[in-house]
Image (tube, rainbow, N blue to C red):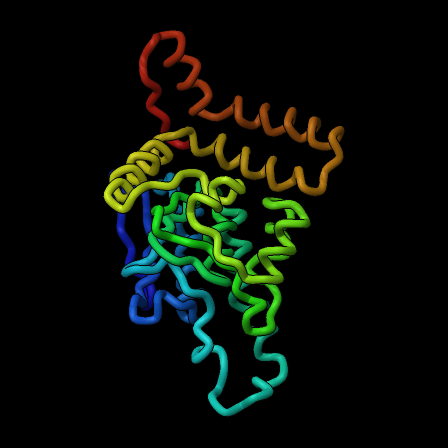
Length: 266
């Protein structure tokens, strides 16, 4: 079905992991891989059996960014005038939109270097789990471009203006541990721990009250533009919506009965 992705399913279909599967290019992004990934996220979002989604890379890298051979016709120094804009608008922006509005948690499993658009692909996910040998680099400036893949929107919010400017202007590499210290990465594991520890977290996410997580994502997203008053009103509305889910009823009953809840994600 997907020509550029290797899909794994775990926990009776509750978890789906898409692996970028072009290790010979360190999983550089192409128009087909961007389209495949967008379709994968959209399908997982709408599939009621899927409760958690993850993105990772095969081989030694997470993602090395845009494949320049895929973007440009060799020998055309002007790059067909607006070809870059077309790639951003037609391929990157739809993927960013699907990831950020996905109804399920989307986790980046960063198994190696994440560079340029590859770094932002990880950072626009709901959270990042990284192996300690990985690094992140906003390498756009190295070839005379600006951060895309949501970079100009998310980096200042994640890092503040000063550090966002510094990393975007210089392309400086951040180790996994440095990225965690800046709040870009949730957890860092050794190479031996990475697979089992990540699967442990993904297993937990696959059995959480997914409807509440969807509403939490919605609230966080709207907080960027809301006043405090608007956000408090939104919290009331979304909390009422959460309280009408089957998972809320199950959570309360499990607490009262002193047992582990069995959430269904609805």
